[in-house]
Length: 191
Ligand code: ADP
Image (cartoon, rainbow, N blue to C red; front, side, top):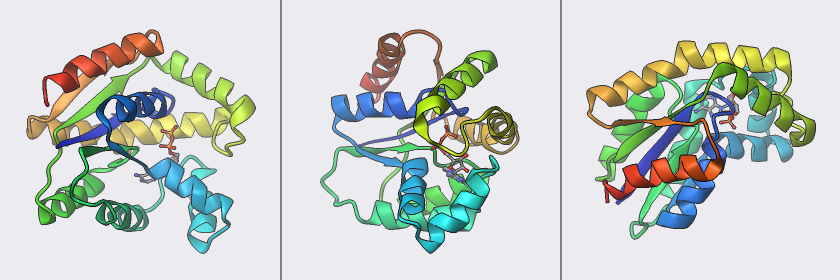
């Protein structure tokens, strides 16, 4: 089973690369950002609360996101090839909760892929996406806040997986195909 975390700053290409990984390795894709945006579109109570954090560039509270994620993971049957977690865990507390969740069902993380992209390029990509995404968080002020939150709260998640020996850095600069080639060579060695 290949259970992957894909991680990196906002705009690093997690979503794009996740789609390619899912296609090649036949994994289940869980994106916490997509799950939250679905709740927002449905105007559910959870969505309305989440939107108040997201539109300011802050993280949604751990308890809320751990709840959503655990429900979705439990819904997977056991004969899947594995899963890719995109946008989760984003704090060390989430990483700890994930360890417990997976070990309860006899699963473990194979590796965390950490996509690194230069800051100017991240801002450029997110501003471009903002022209068409309709996302309340793709504007310059919120992008800068998200990058700060990433450095403070999410970058430490990498150290958590480094200590477990489950960390792989990926150069996220270049074409989509080049980056996917780098990822595939890491994943092929884990199979
Ligand atoms: P990006 O990586 O471009 O910021 P995402 O779609 O992964 O995009 O996340 C968008 C927003 O959703 C985040 O800024 C955050 O507010 C919220 N969010 C997503 N995943 C999590 C998470 N695991 N914990 C807390 N908040 C989250």
